[in-house]
Length: 104
Image (cartoon, rainbow, N blue to C red; front, side, top):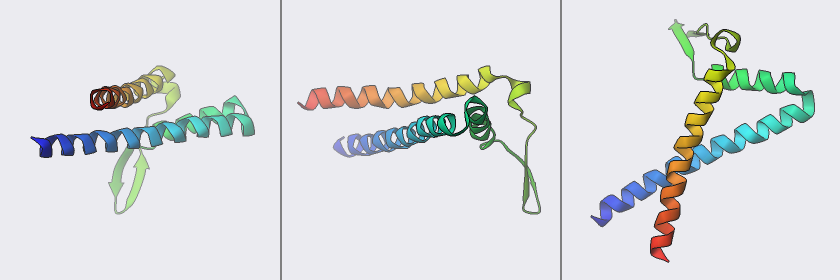
């Protein structure tokens, strides 16, 4: 039983570190883009974040992006995805906090 708790704890902490790293890049990148170029540069940064995981067809080693423009799909979808990432980040945070309270 202790082995399973140890493995689940390591998985939870690994997921938490991964998402905290994502949020660090997201927030710091947004601040840097806002300072260096204003709101239009931040919007371009968000489009880059939105398009990155959506790689379309790969033919002979050449990959093209799928036609997913934020102006067509809407900013609502982008912020819904970010809210889902935040929710997934907060769940391990809460579990980790409760596990620390049980120990001490």
